[in-house]
Image 1 (cartoon, rainbow, N blue to C red):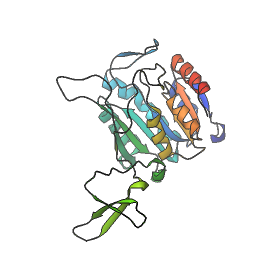
Image 2 (spheres, rainbow, N blue to C red; image 1 turned 30 degrees about the horizontal axis):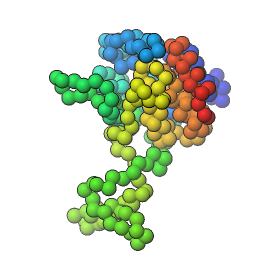
Image 3 (cartoon, rainbow, N blue to C red; image 1 turned 180 degrees about the horizontal axis):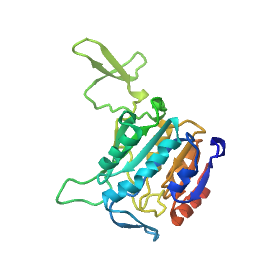
Image 4 (spheres, rainbow, N blue to C red; image 1 turned 135 degrees about the horizontal axis):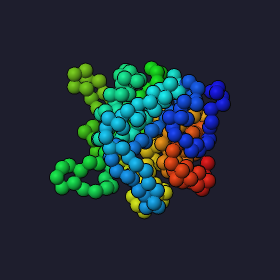
Length: 276
């Protein structure tokens, strides 16, 4: 198969390892993986959809490793991989990614913080996921302007108004005396900890009933920042289809893959009901 023949704008019912083996080298611009979290549970949705989540970490990492290797081969030189995990497996998977991509290709560990979910009376509440970002090569794509967020007026910096009356944060370096000025309206690039995107609650309009569904805003930030219009964005554990829906809306080509017939059915239905 040539790069031009890679399936695009398709939902594929298949094991992602088999699908990856069929792809040519350097054909995917962005890959998002939201694999099972090694909980050892059978995950069920409100609609009765279910899948088994392997609990043994060694088994889980051994199962995931060839998929990470396949993604590494299939990424373009400027391409990126995002692997969405939680505290159970993130550290183990990072070691594997360092081995496959090289530690120098690690870009960020993004900490996605949320408040929805149960409470723990014997420890601090576990309210974040880790999203590991690795680049295929040294010249990965990153569009900072596409994902700027508002600056917070209540920071340690003093706020002044410029000649046009617009608010500006001002910071002075005590050693050099140099002054830095940051217009509030211009926004800033988000840090690597994200508190402004909440997890979906049960009554959220985006909800499909899939148990591990992620919010569209989360995927929108990733896709806007690390892909260009018409790039090919792949989600190889597509679940409820969030990545495909957002990628299509943003003018990217997309590929959604899942071994679950329920996930494929939900994704296709969601795409049919959404506006391109």
